[in-house]
Every structure is written in structure tokens, then in C-alpha cells.
Image (cartoon, rainbow over all chains, first blue to last red; front, side, top):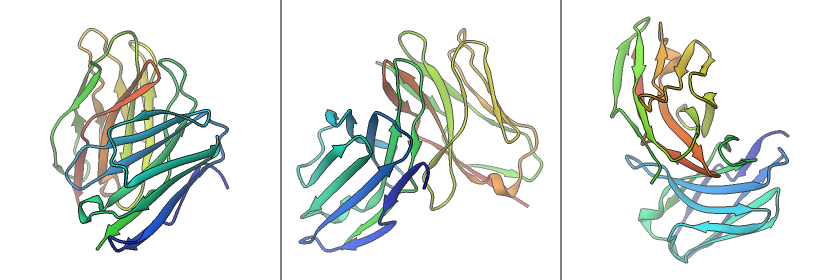
Length: 114
Length: 110
């Protein structure tokens, strides 16, 4: 496999469920990201990890819990979500250095919270 | 702070029409600039990029020129196809941080 792979592609969960989104990158990048994309809203950066260390958390509610066990894998653990959390969750990776480097995105995980 | 502003959509064109999607940016220093495209049901894909002033990025018939004097990076295509229907995002990287515009939806009708 190449690029950035996200699983599952689609997820439906109730508000009391616990589920996880998984992201894997095969590009040798040092940074991984979670973005949230909701209908009619700009892309929202949620978390950034550099070399497995969290370097950014944009005031994301604690019902979203990221985990980065190594530079190639990133998880987003979900629990007691709300219907307004329904969105497309995009994982990305980069080898960003200063003002160069681009983001490579996965296909996204479409989450529906009932 | 750094930011990207792009024209509101949706933009609706007939096939073979000329496309321009405007993008302007605010940044300290010398960012790299990008256009990403998102087809329905997919993630964002890099369409083209430019890393310094006066560079022209191009791919699949799309072009954009890094204009430092006007802080702009407008996306153009001479003749759009139905298959170009998608959402287009302008973005920049500055000091290891990425900034995205709000996206412009393009609808191309046959």
C-alpha cells in the first residue's frame, strides 16, 4: 500500500458507543494530522503530531481522544459523541519543514452519530 | 496571523468554459502555496503547488502563479470538463503550519 490509508471509510455509531478511527501512512513522514470536515464549514484542524508527540490540539472536546503510537500510525478514539460530530474525518501526513512540504490526505472516514 | 481567502462558490460553468478561482493570502515570510482538489466522496488531493514568487504550478491543464506583489495564487483552466466538478481549496504552509481557504465548489455542466 502507498500513501495515507484510513479505516473504516464509513462508521455509524450511537451516542453511547466507543469506536476508533485508524490512519496509517507509508510515506515516511514525521507529522500526522486529524481534520474535521463538516458540511458548509471550513476544514477544521483538530490535532497535530510530530515525531509521535502532540504539538497541536485546537480546543477539541475530550470525547475525541487521539493516539499516535509511532510516526506511521494515528488513531482517533471516539466516545459519547453527539449528532453534531457527524462529519468526514480526514487524516493527513507531511514532512513539513518551515515553509515547504505538502499535506497528503487519506480518503477520509465518514462518521454518522445517531 | 496567516490566512487564506478564496472566492465563495458555487461556481457553475458550461463545459469548455474558462475557469478562474481567486485566492489571496496573508503570511509572514515566504510561504509555499497550494491548490488541493476534493472530488465527491474522497479526501483532498494536491493539484499543484508553487514554492517561491513568480513560480507557476501546473497540472491537468490547471495553472496558478505565485504573485507576491498582489499576494495572490489564482487558479485557472482554459477549458473545463464535467470531470473537473469538485471542491477546490487554496492553502499555504508557513513556519510548519498549514492554512486552508474555505473551498470553492465547481459545477461543470455538459
